[in-house]
Structure formats: C-alpha cells, structure tokens
Length: 459
Image (cartoon, rainbow, N blue to C red; front, top):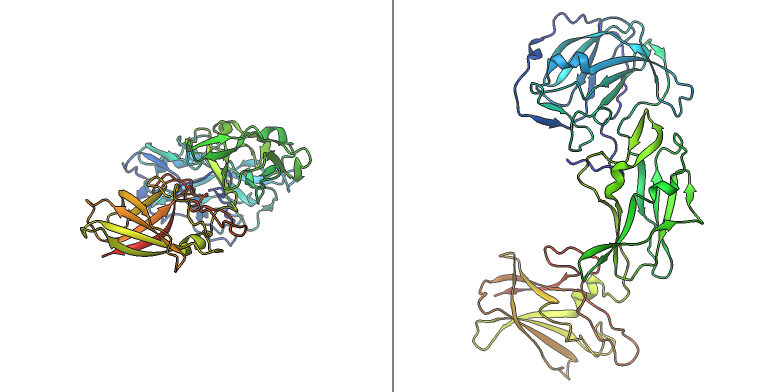
C-alpha cells in the first residue's frame, strides 16, 4: 500500500482509547528472551504502532501492550524511545491538545513478535494517558531499521515519523483535550467546481481541515501551491493556466477557498495539481500540537495530480452511438490471404453519420488502429478502400486491408480517435460529429483520443 498525502488518505497514526479494570499482574512470569536483538535486512517500516491490549486502572503493575509495527524490534531502544505522559486538560479542550504533566514510570517486561509488554505504575495517572514513541530513538534489526510513518524518503525524522497513542485509565484523573497528531491531513478536499463551463470562468475549491483551530486566512497562500493545467493533444503536454482569487467568493465557508481560471474548451481535459514547491507549505499555527506540513519534506511524488476533468463535447458521438454506426464482416483479397475488415454503415438521411456519411479524408491509418487481442499487438494496415454508396440500401462500406504478412487469427479490435469525423446531413438535421474519446489522454496502450468501436474475429 502506498500512502497518498494531503487529500485522500487519513492519517496513519490513529489513537486507540481503551478502558477496563486492574489485572493485578506483576510481570514475573513474562518471557523476556525476545529482548535479544535479531539481525535482519536494513530499511524502514511504515506500519504505525498501535495498542494491542491494555485495560489499566490507577494502580501499580498495570499491563500495556504495544504493537510497534515490525518484528525484530531492538528491545533495548524501547526505554529511550517510549515515554508515557500524565495529562491535564488545556485551557480550551475543544481546540487545544492535552497538556503533558510529567512522565509515568514503567518497565519493559517482554517483547515478542514486535509487541512490547510494558508494566506501568499508574497510581497517579490521568485518564487518558499519552504514549509517545520517538522515531529518532526506536530501531529494529540491530539499528538498521527505523519507522517511516509519513512514507517519504527518510526514516526516523523527529515529528514526521513519531507516534502518539492514548489509553484510558480507570480511576485516573479525568482530562479532556485534543490528541496529538504530527501528520494531520490539513486538506479535507481540493477539486474542480463542476461542471466546467465553456462560456464562463471556472473555479477550483480548496478546503482547509482545521480552520476551527487555525483561523489564518490562507487565501493568498494556497494560490501559490496549486495549479490548473490543460492537456494539449497535439503536443501531448500539459500547460498551466492563470488562476486568480475569486474576489466574489474567496472564502465560501470556514476554511474553504476558491480560485478561478478561464472558460474551458469543449472536449479538453484539465487537471488540478499540487505543485513541486508544496513541500514548503506549512500551517501558520500549531495544529494538533505541531506546525503541520502539507506533504513530507522530501516527498519525491510532486507535483501530484489531485483532480482531473474532461469537458463534455457536444460534437462527440457517445460510445453507444459509435458502436452502433457500423456492422462488421470479414473478407479477403483476391488471393484469399489478405485479411480485410469490412465496416458497413448507413448514409440514409437522419442516420448517425448523416446522409453525407463519414469524412473519408479523416479515416486514415493514423486515425484508425487494428489491435489483435490474441497476440496483444497492433496490426499494420496496408490500405483503406472506400466503397461506393449502395443506392438500394443507402449504405457504404469501408474496407480495411491488413498487412498480408500478418496471418494470425483471432479477435481484432477497431480503434478510432477523435480525428475521425462524420459530415452530417446535406440539409439541416444531423450535424457533423466525431468518433474517439476526448477524455482518453493516455498514450498507452492505444493512443491519445482513441476508443474501441467494433471488433471482428477471423477465421
């Protein structure tokens, strides 16, 4: 699993709150043999620590078990890396994190399969208690492996890779507040405001998650870290468009910001990205105990695509229409060796293509492809022949001659791109349209703008 930052994945470190009664366990029978280091491969681990069990009360010898997220943990680093805090309520519990009020003593009673069993003296504990796991100090595999909870290129970073867990303590001094989270997802959404318009300016909307905690006006800040780009089907490149603050609707709600860009083009594809410089984007105030980052500092995935939209094109035939245009048959040349795909379509007035039929100048080898599904290859087209109109049936047939050297049988799919056009009716009625798929901007596997229209099987 790969963590995607900023918008669509919840924080990896979830707090688990447990309640229960005193176990009275002293710890004398626990197996401590796993305290010895085991040599394994070096690297990092990305599984966040979690509470396995723990139903403590305000007494001595209370068991707390933590799954540290990796086996072969270096048990001798646990006392330096794990700290248990007594907590107090902050001034404003609704927006502020718990106040740490001293540490709570414990001993490591055993480690097995990556699960550490702690025996804690909770006689003076709060309810809940906080457990911090310091990623700069906790290691596995004889010091070769560290936690990498923000899934970036560097493990064991202070704050970025630290973990915080919370456990209820029966009989402990009650405290209320917000739980610390060093990797809070600061955006609850970023997207186009749809549908995109071809006659008026369009908008993107950025939702800041923690406006109730951090009331900074980010309108002039966020605009520097997001971009709207339009895809050029000719050059197969993305071009950034000018975006400006929506002066009439800069903040449409608490922490929600809008920016505008010019009217869209029918059939064009646009994407919203968070830019490469976004590694520098941070909150202006502490949120859940920390200055939060939009993305990890050394994240190699930027720029990152957040949303993609293709503007509907009224001149594009629907897929159902494209499929229904042709009836297919298979043939061969006079030698009987050359496979010929025959596409017959109606040129009757009011038909999908209109009585003028398909623009034959657009039905070319560049705009039409034949894909052999058995061998997963495109088959070269040797020539395309356009048959005359059949006066009795109001039909025309297009003959696609495959390369004579290609003799394999099986299913052959016919793909067309957006350059293949119809001519419509000679008199007003059916307007000229095009085949293909404007929303397909992928060069692989079939090509930009291409769509499968029909198929035929040989023999």
